[in-house]
Length: 85
Image 1 (tube, rainbow, N blue to C red):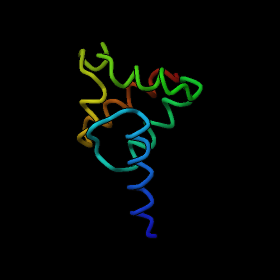
Image 2 (tube, helix red, strand yellow):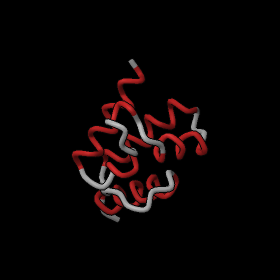
Image 3 (cartoon, helix red, strand yellow):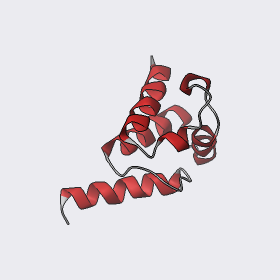
Image 4 (cartoon, helix red, strand yellow):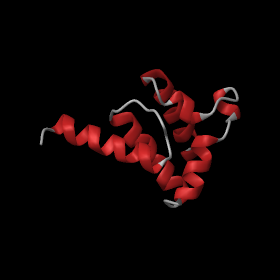
């Protein structure tokens, strides 16, 4: 298996666990999953809720809807990382 294949497989699994129907398969989604898991104690119910709920810091957009583009992923990751500080 190539590194690219493993990356796609890991991103796919992260997308499935978060209940996403569509996502961009790359390292950013894996980072989003990791930060979200750290913030929620890996509580899948809370993680899915956060991803599926409109967020004020994302101009009222649902994070899951932004995860279909690299730009959207970076916005979501930025919001999640801001919670860590």
